Length: 136
Image (cartoon, rainbow, N blue to C red; front, side, top):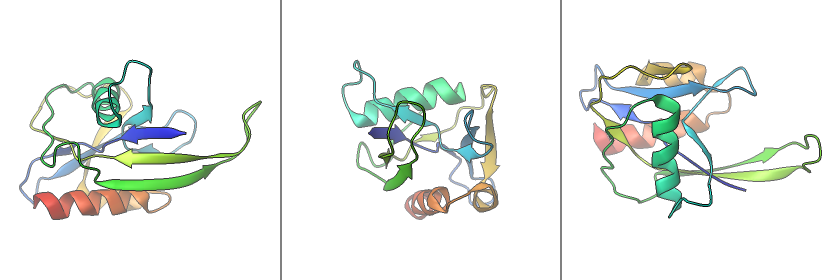
């Protein structure tokens, strides 16, 4: 299953840079905005942009490295109901925003240093580290 996501990063100033994370409904943890590709998505990048808008409530994004992949995370998903065990391939992109608008319910800004303690498996820390290296 292909999934797409991007932890939008605000500000290029090291002391104020932050990533937007969303509370997972199915697990009590924070994740990057993202989700499954939909039939109308022209590309995996477009799906990540759509998901970032839907899940954060923000709309003004830039893509400093275009549609180049920032990070790829592969993780096992256990069987659930009629769905057998399978893998998710999270294709992550770099989105930035200067949008000071109100975040959607369930979304929050995390200073970059606070991402690691909120990360349950290290993959968000890795992706945010790659974003930080590109931006700061």
